Image (cartoon, rainbow, N blue to C red; front, side, top):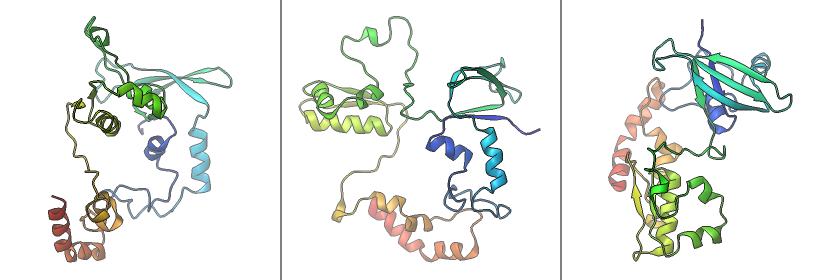
Length: 238
């Protein structure tokens, strides 16, 4: 019997998990292309009908909880309780996996649990989530950080955006500090010769320079042929 998967959210991440809204040739991971047995560019009418029958629109997740005492075991199950916004009826689904694709605009901030009296209340300054910061207009956000010592916790995109805004507002007199657990490689924002460095990473030509498992002979020969170009590109970036 196949595995039952519940995808919560119908944004970019949710659709990516379902892989239904773009042609298969444009919607695949470079290292894991679609197998040759998949011949349709888009889902067929019958496939689309079956997918629509499986989708629940206008539904909000009430709660998700694990029914297994060992959530990481192969026999673990999840109970997903969902409420229909139109009929106000409640449904319970038992699934093997839950994929949360709530997104940045889900109004569900990711805030860690703290020990009693060890959380934001122990700090005499102001503590806000990046979601609350993003809800402010430009003037309010600028006035909030102007002339203050700011510490950003995190190292992903929103953390870097906020740290950059704080640095631009306060300069070197009040440097913004960034606290993180896992280091990521961030692309520099300067433009040598007026060319964004991101073009050297994310262009389709740059993708052609990387050998991928399962690619055909022609693409493999092209990768070998342009190997000197790839080496010079990475030397330039370093």
